[in-house]
Image 1 (cartoon, rainbow, N blue to C red):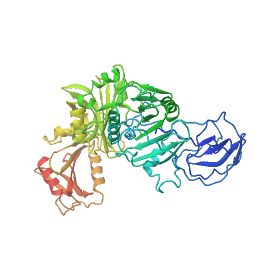
Image 2 (image 1 turned 60 degrees about the horizontal axis):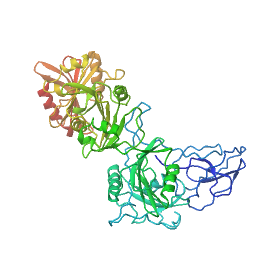
Image 3 (image 1 turned 90 degrees about the vertical axis):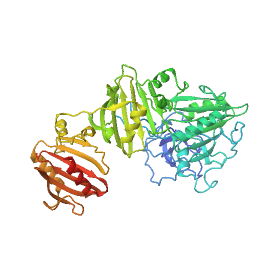
Image 4 (image 1 turned 90 degrees about the horizontal axis):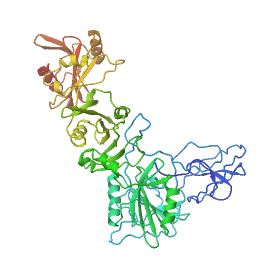
Length: 583
């Protein structure tokens, strides 16, 4: 997250009773210190945000004193995230971030971090119903949050906004005229320092809505897309500081100035106002965002434009510079939000001499050369275009969402696409048509899998892919998953065992308490176990319904291969009929 709250530690006493007072992460405690000696003095129960926080001149070391036993004070409007308390009093104020920001997908390399896929917020202060440029609202004397507003303030959404503000503000719910019409919550805050005079902050629910709102405000007010170097005029740009980057937009007139900014992937946009644009910009650089701050080039730079040219035009048109921790070694990093298909696509491009294979392999992906995204099985395989191998593509489902990862060895493009879909088939289809047009996923079989393939019905062979085998736990030596395409039959899985004994052990484990020779696979006679026969061939089969899904598991006459078929709607008759025609 991109806010700068007080760390749980010793700070100058904001109530000016003592030299230092201990902040526990949610409230000021009764622990105080003077001349290096710790004492007890309950904090005033004002219910308001504490005054401006001062930087102590030098750390002091009080003599050890017993820590008083006391309940934690109720949190005020600045309810910062809980942290392990630092019991060593007191030291210089540390305004480092509590969270290093968002990042893309999961990876093993230290260069990769996880992106929480939150959208940037947007602001309403610069957009009004009339056609005249908006004026910064004069909040006047803003009451504190205790006793001055409705009892349900702050809501959870409002608290999210407050938690991410820099210190030194008193907040209340924004008036209807200042609230963002498409946002989840808005707050307005008066400052106990100058500048700024005030902040209005908005929380949005997703990136697309907030970005559209922000872009609309920029367009309606005629803001130039040039770096906002000093907020001396209407301009917009990008900034970077520490591990963060974000957007900055400036407006000013003869007697007032406004500055809006976003940080990382947070869904909050703050809009600060003041009389002097230079002072407002200086305050923002030193107190509002992690520094030192660098104003970035407008998007796209020449390097970014070169990287965008490596992508399909329709996908490139939806891309913007990635806002967050930049991937080490990347020439450019993008966040793309196509109109349909993937919710978000993250793209990194690298120079020709960069090892994109190692970079790709560092992600926590399915086992190489197994599975098949095109038939709905999580996997990780090579892919080709017009018969030429290009790179690798992997797909998997995590937390109910599908991820597709890939790289192009020739262009140095590495991508990650995320979908609101728990079946990898449609996401892969989108990827092969929109992200890497013409891509064809390759299949790879080892010797054991090739032997199993000989047992597969000819009409199914083209749909089969290899699944990983765990040599420590699985009795089988190879496993193929096939997609029959027949309505009602969900999947057909073929197994190969090294010995008949292992095959029989697997059959017995699946049989469990089902009585031997208890019946044939017909509706109303499950679970059952019995003999199947087709001409001169015969074997054993188990029939049961588990969680509404019909299953038949049967051994082949050779005693070393088996097949498992499953069907929805508990339709045992459908499975039995399918097996009779596909053995």
